[in-house]
Every structure is written in structure tokens, then in C-alpha cells.
Image (cartoon, rainbow, N blue to C red; front, side, top):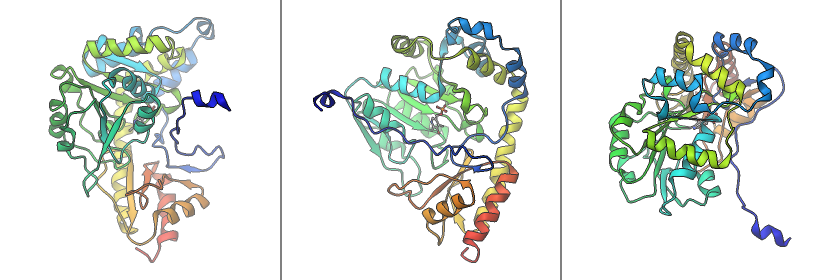
Length: 354
Ligand SMILES: *Cc1c(COP(=O)(O)O)cnc(C)c1O
């Protein structure tokens, strides 16, 4: 078909499976195993269906923005709110990576970065993690069109210390550096305090993991007002009303309940520590995780075999048929009960092979 020559052709991002059957143990997309804050359920009951007649508020003018600003001790004009951090990151790519020079990100990282680069026709170059799966800051000191990396990195779970993060930001003052902190609440150290000092730093976070609200689609970016203004200019040139009334209300309710949030993250960290012991006992090795998942490889049994057998037991984890990581499984930390079921299944699969 002739018209196909004019199509923007892309290979889309593949998210983890979302099996719709009941009773599966879902440890494959880094969702939170616990419900959102009780404040969220309370606020749902107060939502007004009549408000849905109206277009929603501009996110930066809402209670959600106020709550986030006060939680992080920044001003409202330093926050951009979007439909999950995927929307925020996508807008940031579209806004800041315009130079025509290649942007840089790790070879093993969030697999959406190359997809956005492709769809927006942004050239990119990947930088290999070292043999321990760590990001090498020195790789990001060549001329480039921008830098993006998660910290902790995904799917490795490895945290880079703030000194090294700053080294990358400081070496790239002429471009925007995006630090994707989707997992920072599980033991990471945020680069947020650096935004005052670096006008080229954009810190991106999400409600999808630590706030148990992946289904509400709320993400945000923090940086100096000028960066945020540029992001808003592009966003309001694509779609003015991205955040719906419900998400804005429920997001605000979540941020209010700080005690619950802290407790929830603490529980996941505790379960992760126990998982480290159990997985070691079962014959796995893994880098130290600062996130809500463990990136593990079995000493003897191929990851793909374990992946398939777990699935037969209705336990879903994540596996990539990709260079360097094909023998690894990314296992999301679930409830203690779900994790016990995982260990029991792994015992059967790997028993005697540890
Ligand atoms: C989960 C994740 C995101 C996106 O999450 P949203 O649900 O879109 O907020 C972004 N970056 C990384 C590294 C992630 O793991």
C-alpha cells in the first residue's frame, strides 16, 4: 500500500503480562502488593459524578500539586504532573532532546527509553553497564544531546550513589539530565536536593510503585521553574487535559497519608530482605536491590526454564530474551504470603539444584 510509506513506524514497548484470571501471583510488573492509602478509599466515596461534566483542572493548579510541593518542600511551579511517569518521560524526551545529537542511556535499563527515542526520531547511544551491572559515570562525559537513567536502575535494582549522579549532572550542564526515580522510595537516595543547584536536572517519580496506584496513572517531574515551564508548553500543545478529575483527587489523598506510605515501603523492604535470604538458599545470585524487585539468576537452572515453570504454577515474574540479561528473572516483591508461595514453587523447581 502506497500510504504505508508515510506511516510513522515504531516497535512499541512491551509491558509485562497482565493476566486477567483470578488467583495468579503477579510478581512481574513491580506493582505494590498492598492497597493504596486508606485516605484514597475515603476520597473515592466523596467524588462527585457531577464534576465529570466539566473538564478537569490544570494539574499544576490542584491540591495534588500543593500536596506534592509541600511534601517535597518545593514550589508548585517546580512540579509537572502527568499520566504516569511514562507520560512525563515521554513529554520530557519530546521537549528537551531536540539537539540532533545522540542522547545517552545505559544498555540495560528501562526498555521504554529507546522506544521514545525512536518514535520522536531522537538519535541515541547506549552505554554498557560494567560487569557488575553498574552505571559508569565516566561514560556520560562525552558530548551528547541529553542523558536519562533510572536510579535505582531497572531491571537491575542497583542504586548509584548521589555523588556519582551529581558527577553525571555536573558533566552535562549544556543538556538536560533526567533521573528516573520510579523506585527511589524503596531505599534509594533522591537527586531532588540537587535541583536548586542544577538548572539542567529533571527528577521524575511515580505513584505506580511505592504509592500503589499504577491503575490511576500519576507521575510527576521536579526541576527548576524554567524546565517545568518548557515541559508544560509542549504538553499543552499536545493535549491540555491529560489528568482526569479522579486521578487528581485520589493522588492528593494519597500524598496526605504519609504514615501509611512510609509503613508500606518499610514492609516491602523487609520482605525484600527476607527474599534475599530465601533466594540465596535456593541457589540464586543477584545484585543488591534498592527497589521493590530482585534481579536474580540461578546458579544452575536457566532463567527461561524457571520462568516457564513458575508460570505453570500461576506465578508470573519477568524475563527478557535480551543480551546479557537472558539468564535473569526480575521478581517483584509481593506480600509475605505471595513470596512464601514463590519460595515453595522454586523449591520444587530448583530443589536439589541449589
Ligand atoms: C514503572 C516505571 C516507569 C513508569 O511508570 P508509570 O506507571 O508510567 O508511572 C518509569 N520508569 C521506570 C524505570 C519504571 O520502572
